[in-house]
Image: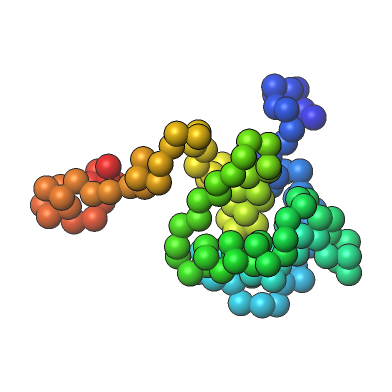
Length: 139
């Protein structure tokens, strides 16, 4: 690890698995959803592993659960992972964000008392009407 990163517990998934991501991207022939760096099959392989491509499994989870999560995200819907502490929700969200965008910093972290309404954005309707959709109109 480089001297400037000695405060990290571990590197982000995009750094830790950069070789695997590059291999999957290079071999990915399936169509990608808009804005995604990998197709759904490649994103699935990144998380669940693929022996043929020498990609290791990163989390113990039902393959059908990962497939449902990927389809949900690919169709523009949100995904909230809920469960007991220590069940790898944060790791899974980091892996999903990395497979989709290449940037695990796009994960929203909440606590046990965080509700869906608290993390979703809304609009300041006065600014929306006057200036149209813009960053300033988001609340």
